[in-house]
Length: 226
Image (cartoon, rainbow, N blue to C red; front, top):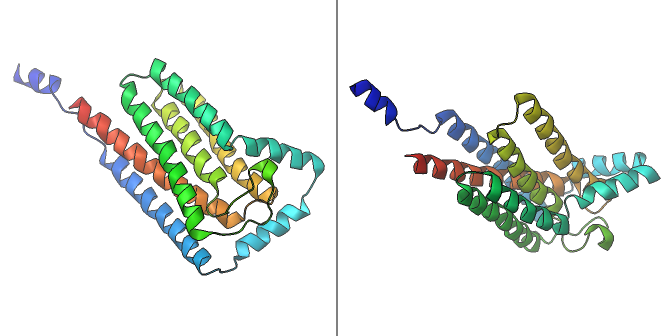
């Protein structure tokens, strides 16, 4: 009788491996961003930027340029804002304990927007080219088309992992989303509105912020289960 009672009142444990993995990702991505940021402040020239620019110049094609123009729109402010509203509606009607997921998704998206804009003004790195049609205005570092999609599509990956979709379905959907995040970043370099290091720093910053938000969200849900 006692064992049954203890089993019924057993408190769920937040996996230690999850916490260690999250902290490791946060540490690595923050280190990468900090290293790139330090070099940008010192106005260093990056071999990565030169090689990426040379490579994209060698594969310039009219059809590929158009494809990249379409892809880059999936990381635009207008699209991410509209899609974020739709995702909030989806979370509200589908997920239990919806308010916490809504809250942390909003914090994640608003927070990364403020971080990106503040850092752009801080570093004041000029773009390779100014192209207003692709949101290629203002300062360059870090790439907002890398930070925003990393957080937005990354949160969808998190929701997919937590969903009841089959394992195969999760792998397919999440693989597409990861590929989309990478392609959006690559499109910025191909269209010559960002340096490769802008994109790399954006990915690092976006992933760092996303994992911080998800770690706090998971902790909050765990506390509520208690």
